[in-house]
Length: 295
Image (cartoon, rainbow, N blue to C red; front, side, top):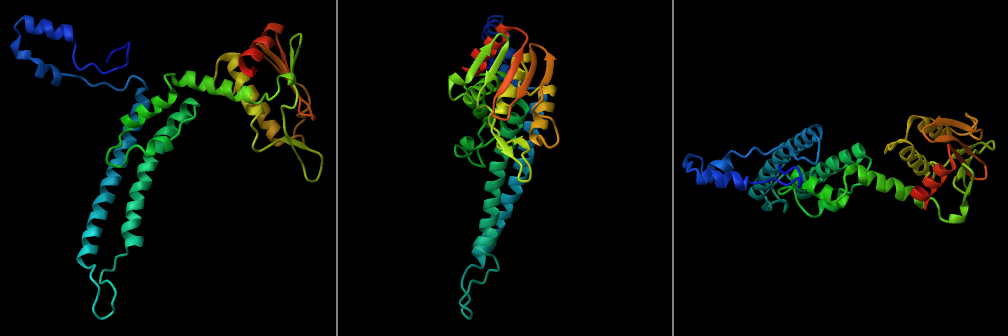
C-alpha cells in the first residue's frame, strides 16, 4: 500500500526489475503477485475494518439463506402452480405475495440495511452526514461489498478526511443560523447575536425552553466547542448548559449568566427575546469566532 496515495500497488516495479536482472527465475512475476499481502484499507482504523467485515459476513450469510429459501419456494410454486380442475384455484399453498414476494422484499431490506448500517456507523463515529440512499440505487444484493460502500463514503467526503468533513459541516451549520449579519454585534470582548434562540413557552406558566427541533443553539454550541479546543463534539460544559436549556426555566435558571472560564470563552448568557451574549477572553477571540464560524 502506498503511504502517499493510499492506493494498492500490485507490485514494486524496481524490485521486480532487480529480480529479473539477477536471474532469479524461481521468483517470477506470478510468484510476486501471489506474495502480495493485501492490507486493511489505510483510510480506516482496524476497529472500523473489523466492524465492516463482520457486517458483510452477517449480510451474505443471511442473504444466501434467504435466496436459497426463495429458490425453493419458487420451485415449489411452479411445481403446483396449475389450477385445480375442481376448485379453479392454484393447487399450491404458496402465495406470490405472502411468501414469494415477502422473501424477495426481505432480501431487498437487508441489502439496504447492510449499506445503512455501515454508513450510519461512520456518520455517528466521525460526526459527519452520509447518505445510504445515494449508494443503494447503484448496486444490488449480488454486487455490494463493504469495500464498495467505503469507496462511496469517501466519494461523499469529496476528498476530505472525516475530521475535515465534520469541521466543514460544523461551520456551515453555524453560519446558517445567521440570516442577517446586522444581528451580530461585537463590543470589546463580547459577541451578541440577536434573534438566535426560538423559545417554546409552557402551557401553564411562562416557562421557556429551546424548541425540540432546535437548529440554532446546538450548531452554535458545536461551533464554540470546535473553536475552543478543536473538537467536533460538544464539550462537556456546553453539553451541560444545552441540557438545561432543553429542560427549561421551570427547572433551571437558564437566563442567568453561565460561567465557562475555559479555553478562550469566559461566559454566555441567554435572553428571553432570543439574544445570546458570548464573552470571550479577548476582543481578538470574538472577532476570530465571528469571522470563521458566523460569516
